[in-house]
Image (cartoon, rainbow, N blue to C red; front, side, top):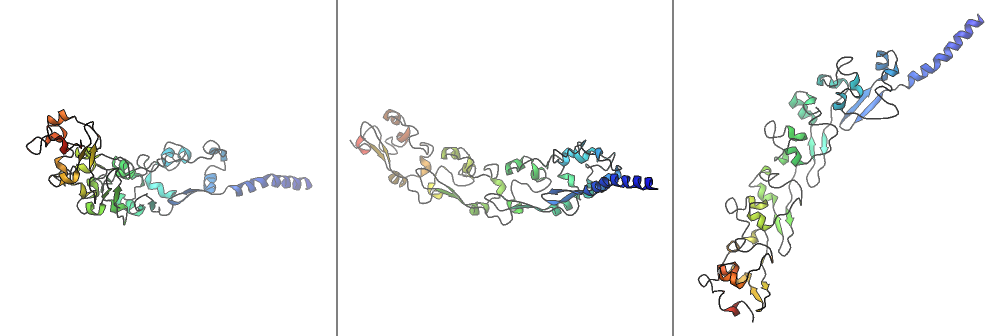
Length: 340
């Protein structure tokens, strides 16, 4: 009798660590930024595999090397996908089973954007639109779980939101800014220019005539200071010159004061061996417009090119008008220009 009691006591002591160990197998929560945590139940899985921890540890989950996997990786049999492939257990690739792990409602996602109002993505709206098909977006291509934030220009090429918001499936990301950026009022943009008063672009005025997609990103990227163009570039249809071509809107090659408010071009002094020659903008603007000279004869750049008197006599530079027909000839009356 005493021997039997001793054996039973010994067996109880041996089983005690197993009881304690079982209590240590807690549920594991995988926290997600925009949804409720995914909960892994040790109890359910241990019951399924007769308390054989080695089925998962360390064959699938290395306790020494903690690592997070994306859904795309799980679909390739990584992590939970090693068993949840549709053979041993339900597949992580089957979107009807998403709710078996992902409980609760996914949250809205707010994107803070520099220089613009926040953009809010509504899971509820998109889930209703896709009929609850999560994999419409979470398919390892549109939303991969690894990609960082993308620019509006990248979206226009089909990245993330742009995969659907392309003007065919849904409104295009190239315009309609107010649909995502609620309450957005684009600011005026001031361009500081050396040697001339600054030019201000009014979003308020232009959005009253055009839509956002007419300019962004076909002409202008959604990025301040991305590239500056010269007036010569604009005259060739670049930047503002795409519309300000004298047909769709007033030409960028003239009417300077329409953009450069309060601009009064100064006199230009040309230093020569025959004495300084002075060009008076004020005098010439009394008879001509900016477009008569710029940029057909003169680029909007000081010192771009100097012409000789011989070249002027051949009709170059000032000689285009100073030909004894439109104005006095450059061939004589030197003192009219040169202080000799």
